[in-house]
Image (cartoon, rainbow, N blue to C red):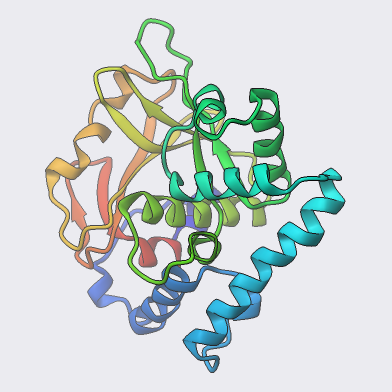
Amino acid sequence: MFQRLLKNEEVDYYPSFLLDSRRAEKLQAYTHYLKYGGLPAISDNDSIEDEKFDWLHDYVRTYLERDIRDLASFRDLEPFVQLQQYLAINTGNLINASSISTQLGINIKTVQRYIRYFEISYQAIVLPSWSKNQNKRLVKSPKVHYLDQGIVQAVLRKRGGMTGSEYESAVISEIYKQSKNLRSRVQFSFLRTHDNREVDLLLEFPDFYYAFEIKATTKVNRIDAKHLFGLDELLDKPVKKAFVLSNDEETKHFDNKTTAIHAAMFLG
């Protein structure tokens, strides 16, 4: 469904996920993705859980001991490991290089350089805040999103159980990867105002936006979509469609622009 939107194909009907003929298949892939991430090497469902997590831990170690050394010629990996863990803990949250520098005791320029290495090695994306309306008091700090939930768990040495922020990152990373795979030139950002209005993701096209709220809940209601209403008054271009993506299998239409739909159905 999402790829059709990226191709500017009209989607006029959003059915209930319960009626999807491929529901079981999509849910299986979605559940695996949320638990282990999306790296191809662990997509084999015949592997047991311990093997998958062992592979993820080996991947993180290889990335640190070989790939990042080759990329950045680090002599001391400890500050980078500290930042890696900090970003994993804070995936889906605002980041501030000055604050990170103070908390970790790492030079601010080093923090900025390391974060850039995370981006160019496809470990994370730094999502800019939308800031085209100078008349509104907007939060300008970016957000960080790890691109793989399995890597988050390996870095933090945990298994299962996602926070709301981790779920947000997992969904946004899949939107990001599908967009890149189709070579879409869509621009990614998020919106937050100083009066706590927040939209988790804005996709900017030449003439319009798609807006997204991402909720881990299994039961969405109109309140979950409240920040999606009236966005045309704030943004510089109209919102063509707004979505609440969640684990609620019932599709809900809140108005002619705003729809709540299961993330697996939307992305599958």
